[in-house]
Image (cartoon, rainbow, N blue to C red):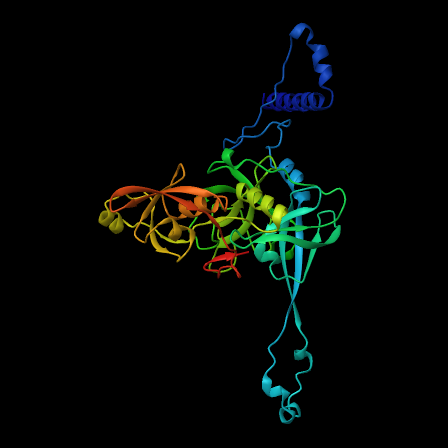
Length: 400
């Protein structure tokens, strides 16, 4: 009996082995043996993963990027290399024959050349390039390198230190001009791209968002209306483009807030509205023409507002009046509070400066004041604002 069970077990094992081999190598033989769906069926078991995962389908498309905007704008951004001579101040003692025997200033008597770099944006096919004034200021030679490696020497058309903008021009054919965007359509939180030549490594693009609009009173420029962004801006980015996701110009990268010299995510760009206005004046006359009335404005603090009986954010205090200036001749006095320029309300010192600067010189403007609690309107013959001889000193907000 035991021998029969052993023989049965061996036979069954052999049959299973043969069946497994046939199923693996010739599964169609089994289908022939089970016509019309009858017979033995075998099914495979799908092994499930040990943890639930999400897997993209094979035909899934890649996420939409900003390569189209970058390709559209990058050819319009150029690298700017400037050189200027720095003359050493010769010690008068070295002119004495006695000291000449012991001290030979040699190469120190020759002027040294200092090089710097920045960026610029082609704004016209005729060769006009907008950049920062501090990039080309006092430069003896300005070399421009395009994205296609063409090179040209640029000349300065005009500059405006009070907004830190300058316009230069090159003479090359087929220049790719950038498209100017509309800042009024931009909002805080919009994605922007910064293009420039940081540290001289070559054209680079970084991404961020608009962190704020209308930043002013930063003590960087005289007239400020900055776009704040967290897109990385570093040395060499100055004068480069800040663009929207369609590749249109929104601003010119100008400065960063940094105590180390590197990007900390607080960068500032001059808005395209200011760029267009300054550029038109520079092309027309080589400098920007602004109105001037000859007063020293002062912000109204809560204490001053209480003393003068006015609400906060209403007007600006006239702290001083230039003798024989336009305001003085019209009868403006220290202590007056300017609340309106023509039909535009004055909310603070910055708005007053911008409104006065926009007035055409040699024409009268009606200014409305508060004097001892009573309204007073005066007609002032607007003068022309003089450009500063030198730019403002830099503070913690550093030009890059």
